[in-house]
Length: 471
Ligand SMILES: Nc1nc2c(ncn2[C@@H]2O[C@H](COP(=O)(O)OP(=O)(O)OP(=O)(O)O)[C@@H](O)[C@H]2O)c(=O)[nH]1
Ligand SMILES: [Mg+2]
Image 1 (cartoon, rainbow, N blue to C red):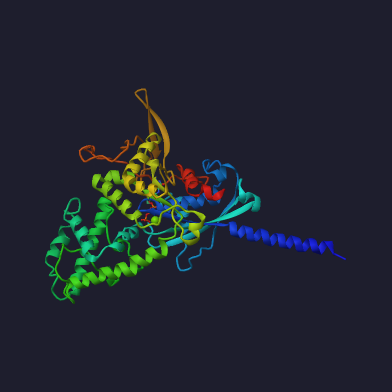
Image 2: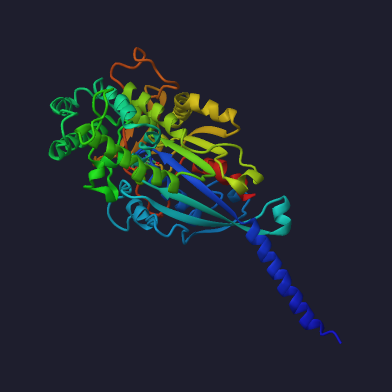
């Protein structure tokens, strides 16, 4: 006789197993590339993303993120990462700085080492095949954070020492670098490249070059500053591998054992042992990409910085894999099929000018974006703010309404209602540039008694980058 209850049990067990298997196969893995030069807001973006998904995940906070709007998001949590040799992104530290228990809120510190984080986003499947076979699904989202300076080295992958010198030395002898480079350039003049190696002289020159790079970063925010580890050495602090610098153009033979031979050796070792492994381990196999750009700070610095930022970003993009991410292709090689250019910190200007900011960024990346679009990559440009540090305020002056912003300027004590300048909506020529230049203020994060972060269009960003994966 058939025991119906044990048959039912067995059937249920089987059904459970089958559901689990379907679940597993429908789980999604997405690796998001958060790209941006130092200070563009990568760490703040990741912190805001995690905070909104783990504890502000609703349709009020994220109305343009479909999974929230349709109330299909179940819960998101940080789960153990896969890469066991990389430190974990210290979300609690970053959040603790922005939302302290007591004291003034502060921005998270600049990143000194690579770190990573994995989120598991559990959601109710919407319409379509997925909802029939697996009503609940999980998407695993992997993100890495790293010092923006390290990104600057990627173009070195394709250069020889000689080519690198040609490019970098040419930059050093022109404005805006030449004035600040005098100490280094005159010391370099005294170095005989063909003489037998003088370790002491090379390391003194490398120190001068390093302080030149640090000064240029601080005073001009220029973007093409290489090698990046001289600015943020991480675990390479003091390593001889870092003791190299560009020299004037040369086309002579490199004499073995000479100063020049030594510089060339160190450059090659740097590219092979530092840049390449970083690129291979962390900068491949992305699915989606956001490129954060601090357009307003670049405008503050002037046309050279803005031009250089645009050139560096376009050059960097050459090092990611793009292409349509079809299921079949994915089995072999994931590719970035959606890319978002984000003009970050748009809370530093009034809402009516966000469009200008997005258009300006669009004009800065247009050329490379065009190539990628041709290859089937979807691209958008947006003005956003991961963490809004100001509030909009309307002020009436002589009967005219003015769209101001209210906040506490960085490193100041007084709160301010301020009318920010309007950014240009395209790249200006040198003659079009305003004589006094631009001056956009930076702001400290807002105190938040309810421990909530505010954003501008972070929900649009999430929808664009992740929305279609959460259907
Ligand atoms: N108003 C505003 N300021 C921001 C925002 N994100 C970043 N900032 C400002 O930009 C600075 C740099 O932000 P980070 O997130 O540390 O930038 P990063 O890209 O991680 O920089 P590195 O770690 O040096 O590569 C912060 O200290 C803030 O002053 C934002 O969403 N709004
Ligand atoms: Mg950072």
